[in-house]
Image (spheres, rainbow, N blue to C red):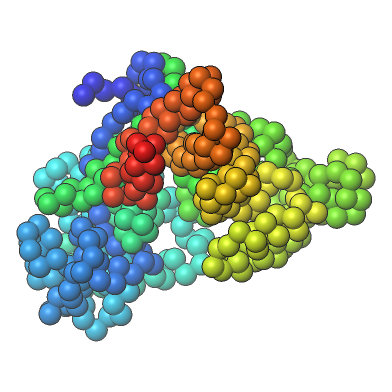
Length: 450
């Protein structure tokens, strides 16, 4: 396929990808293969293979690490067991699992048969910044000693290996594993991304591919971006996550706007006057403040987060998820936060899936919530996003049900419905068939085929 991007250098970000030509919404920008794939550092694959992450793997009789006892997975593990892991049986299993990805990357960089050293050269490992992480240096030092005791030839590259994985690896296979992709690692973060990545299954040869698609039209010369964080969180929460994991602060248009692009996702009523919202102070203080637009009183970020944690705990306590307690949560939270506050949006996403469209009242509620969610996605996750596709499924289901209840046969309604169905496919046709989104699309196709 033609190359749609080129690598540029940004003074603040370093190497970035920009569009080589105008990229239309929904285009495949690239398909990238992993350099290294292994268990997540603090993950536990349990009975999943540490190479392909498919279930029903069994432990190695020598080193106890789980793997598929056939094909590529068996060959890979045999080499790793012989050269390292059979010598580490006295170490705790979680620590040995955490060593799999670093050992694989270290061997690939040392061997360099696929020019891995060169591919990794442009990427940062933030060695100095990582020293400030509580317990990080001690843990890394212990894992380094574990490898060097058996493979002293890898000692010189291990610090960089651990840093590359910490900063550049991506969670894969539903959080069971992590992988490092050479092209994707160039793609910067934005809190209003113009692209999204989609993960395929590990194939029989042990290859994991990731595809990057444009969500919106990307003009020639514009930077290609994805999100590293949860878009349904307010700015200070996203910034904290970015600094903790990737050691940078975001300065995108959303982070620079106290209103978060007028989305309402961060708005909390002033606890003093209850007449207006608190707005964040955009200063560079270590502990920012939120000030009331009406009475001008302020509270600290820590105080605000303490309140939101209490509110979040009420939402988290709704188990199992059910319509009545979620509706009560929305009524309760309306006293304190904006209708589109991120905690309300979480509850609304749950409800949009729980409402039964065969009931006319619930179908109307499902449609209203889907519409509200679309307003937020228009601002924060624009274009052909997965969120938009899944929400549009619920909207179409409610439209079909309401039309059936009212026996509507309006040609204009049918045309709008067709446009919505087309949008669902534009958003979700690229999803793997066995993924949650792929399964949702399959069920949706069965509904509209009736």
